[in-house]
Length: 419
Image (cartoon, rainbow, N blue to C red; front, side, top):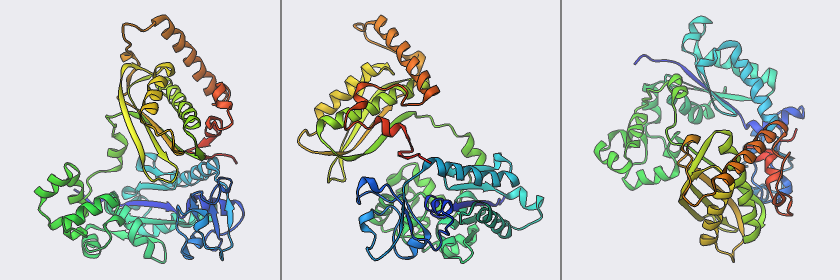
């Protein structure tokens, strides 16, 4: 397969850098964290500025973990603002590239196939990357780094490992360079696609680096990791055949809808159930919008002071998107499995086994006239919410003291969306 050239461009501490830019400050020298301080000092910092990182403060830390001798600004998350900046950055990419050669990997990261553009603009990869980073810095005031590779995986690794050590923020990897320089790099979890769990699994086999994977018995790897062994073996050799067009054309065969939230404080058994019902109702509206029905539901609960909790699911006797049916099943799972004596801090639910609306199915004892009535009502509510906002129509439970629906409806990605 011919070598291509990919860029993976990442905004440094994006949320924190945006907040600095909004204040006319340089995130490279300004101490700033993005966190909702109203949630107490146990709240997680969504981002810390590069200047804070230099002082040893890590992303995703909690406010109380920041050393008391550091003076810093606390900025409340503003997801709409971050999306706005993302759009500005994307507009810079569109000046130089066709959107078919762009893949937005996350709100702060984009993968670009620059192969054909190097000849078009009569330039080389590194100067071109530096030009893009400079333009983003000058026009949007956000610092960025870039990984360059002869396939998407190598570009991602160049960004995650080698760019961090480069003074100009540019990392570059070919397959040969990857094997020569990173075959013995540790820990393995530094590599994209290798979680701590996989790293520990490999360690139990006596594998601690990419060289260990590439030289290990492939049959054993397939026994241990199944089809995922192919990815491990290819990546250990710097091989990645997938291109951007393949990623864009991929259609996920399994469908599911899920949601989770960290409650603003520890909730008791009854209040947590109300919040869970609010979440499930929103999920039913989501199903209606997509003309889907669910056949399986699941819930998750994490108790206050614990890292783990319960996670249970159940296949329903009906295939529906109506809240009256689904909410009853969710409440049954909750009552049968959740400890009434413990306080609760996290909730989650999931709909799976999703099917097109024409697969809707009920049992012989279902009042079909009532079903049609509820369907019309639910569809009408969805249309009103789409037009006037999610908080335009609310249930009485949403107005309770510890209800969370109104707040969540104002959030984007679980975070404050206010300007």
